[in-house]
Image 1 (cartoon, protein in one colour):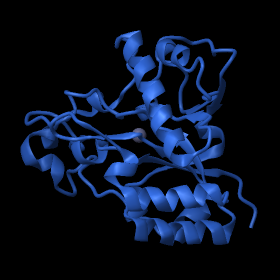
Image 2: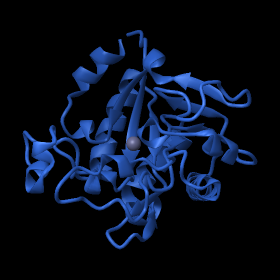
Image 3: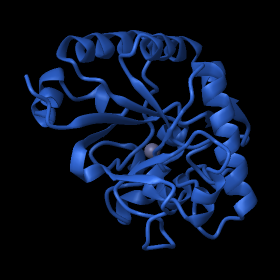
Image 4: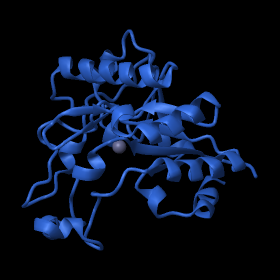
Amino acid sequence: MTLMKQLRIDDVGASTKAYNQYGRSRLTSIGFFKRLPPFQGWGPYAELDATAWRRWLTFFGSRGIRPLIAVTACWVDAASRLIPFPEKFPEAAAVLRAALSDGYITIANHGLTHCVVGRHLPLFWSGNRRWHREFWPELPATLHREHICRSQEILEGYFGQPITTFVPPGNIWSRKTAAAFEGTHLQRVVANRPMADAIELTPTIDFVDDRDIFVVLHDRDLHSVTPAWIETRLR
Ligand SMILES: [Zn+2]
C-alpha cells in the first residue's frame, strides 16, 4: 500500500482533554450540556493508556505508518500545577519511548501546557476554547521562551533524542514563539497556518503546512475511529 499522507496525532499528555469544554453552539456551551453527547464539542475524554497505545502502534507498524506524535510536556491540574508527561502517565510514556527508540514514531513538541495556565478550567456560562491555546502573541516573550525551553528539556530529557518539530497547540504561534526556538533543536513547525502576528515566514524555520501532507488526528479520535478508517485517509 502506498501512503500519500503522513499521520499526526496531537494532544498526547495534554490536560486540554480534561478542561477544554465547550458545546457545539453557544447555547449548548452553557452549564453541563457541553459535557454531554451530542452537544459536547471537545472534552472531557480519557488519556490513551499503555494498552491502547500498544494496540495502535502494532497496527501502525504492520502498515508502515510512522506517525508524528505531538506530546504536550506537562499536564496542568486543577490547581495549576504542572506535572511532566512521564510522571503523569509513566506507562504510556514508556511505550512511546520504546517505539521512538525502535524508529516506529517521531515525537514532536506540542507545548509545555497547551493552555494559558490559570485560565484553563471550564467556565459555567460559556466554552473556554480560547484559553486552550498556549502561544498567543499578546503573552510576554519571557513566557514563550520559558514554555519552549522547559518543554524541550522535559521531552528531550525523557525521550533521549533531540526534538526538532514543533506543533503549536491550536495552530497558534507567533514571532515570540519563533524567537524562543533559538538555542534549541526546534527547526520545523507543522501547523495549518503561519504565525498569528506575521505573514512572512521565518527564514530559519522550516514551515510545513499540514494540510498538504498530513492527516491530523487527536488522541481523542483514537478512542473512536477504526484502523481501516485511518488507512483509507492516508492513502
Ligand atoms: Zn493540541
